[in-house]
Image 1: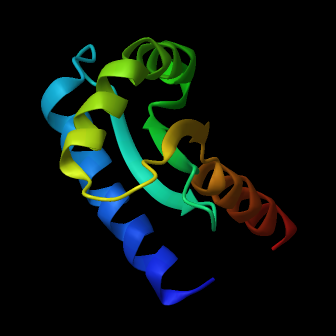
Image 2 (image 1 turned 180 degrees about the vertical axis):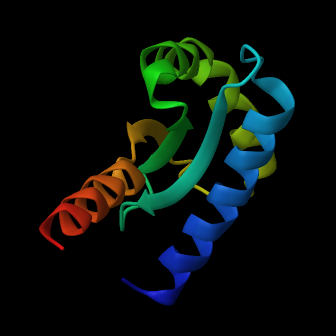
Length: 110
């Protein structure tokens, strides 16, 4: 991946994180973290990987993100000064829960 895409990914990550923190109203105790951003080389699409805590609230939080996607996209478009403007697609990042599972298995082996 080239340096330009890396910079764009970091910029989008910062902006989306800021937008989600300030504008997304979640019920108490539900947290969404932007784990990673992956933008295509042609800048048309960007996958935003989110981590949701607690895991039992994943359906609620993903539904909320989908419902607010248009508003989040609009706010991001106003902050980005580039063409084309990448279309956001939220994806669930399960890295942390998989790491927990592996850690439990390793403890059981010992």
